[in-house]
Length: 140
Image (tube, rainbow, N blue to C red; front, side, top):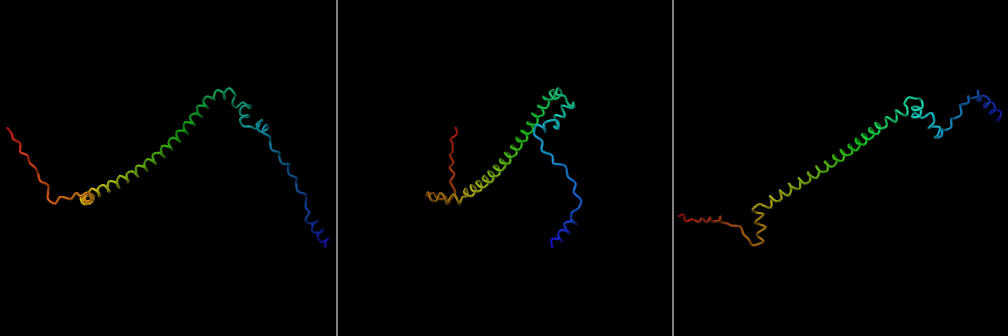
């Protein structure tokens, strides 16, 4: 039985696989900042001189300032929109409250409703119309 396994193992063995290159070890922070950095290549290879970068610094600061103003303006606009929506909601609620109070007042102002309220005080409704008093003045 062992002999059969030996025969199979011999058939399965083929040419040796090629060895791959050893994995690269990760670079340290100093090596990354060395010549591989885009910014260091930009300044060291002479594409942009240090003087030109220094001269452009006020312009870059101005652009950063404008960016901050743009962001602040968008936040201000969003806050205004939220405040306007809240005020519109409050106005809508107050309008509904006004309409309901007005309808309630109109109902309570009816002659029959007023008569019911003053009946408890002992005041009764007139049956005959009021009399008009006319005063004649003596003209000289």
